[in-house]
Amino acid sequence: MAHRRGRAGIGRMNAGAGAKLKYTKKAEEIKEVSLQSAVSTVKQLEVKLTEFAKTHHKAIQQDPAFRHKFLSMCAPLGVDPLTSKKSFWSFLNMGDFYHELAVKVAEVCYAYKSKNGGIMALKEVRRVLNIRGRTKFKLNANENANAKEKERKTTSTSTSTSAGSPGKYSEDDIIVAIGKLSKLGSGFRTVMVGSTRMVLSVPTELDNDHVQVIQCAQTVFAERREGISFDQVREMTQTQTQTQTQQWSDDRVKRALDLLLAEGMAWLDRFNGHEYYWFPSVWKEGMSEDTQ
Image (tube, rainbow, N blue to C red):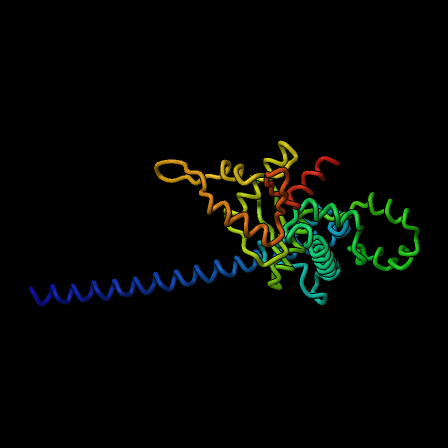
């Protein structure tokens, strides 16, 4: 009887091993089918995306909002219309457009760096770019071909044409261009200060303290149109602990302000025995909103 039970036990073990092998093989088959299905789906989506680009290429070239939506559609599929000129997507001419826009963004940031220390509101960058006009390279191929002829037009005509152009730069366009610059390791990036997106063009790392100080300056300037004092920074900044909320120490406020002063992102104004810190990026942003 014991001998028979042994045979039965071995049989069950062999049967179990065989079943496990079948399950493993079946799982691999399902995995392969799923992978093939996923690849097929992605290829179909790429075809649809290509057809969409061909149908709506004029809107992609001329409408910044539509262009941003199109790039958002491409991203999940790993499709980058901004890459090589030799790629299929070269008919959109988007790569050259963003490369030249990146150069223009860098020019604007460097031109204002001595005044703002390398930090500038994205809205202000966009305003300056749109005042200066479009880049020499146009997304529209017809515009590109007639660029020389357009350059012969009078300044007034060119200005009015640019102002009414539907292809003026959007903030999304500028963010894409800054993404290209950031890959060069030149310090270009965007950071959020309160509800404002700022463009940084220096490699200096701003921590939360620096950002919070700039945000305090934004609040004061928005309310009073004036600089912020050391005491105001200390009163408006605070740290939340497990037991209580504490204001920053004088040393902490000083460290944050000293770096911003050293980088030229803040100016110190002494008047009648009082000291006020002015932030050009905040001031320009506020004044731009006043003129809108």
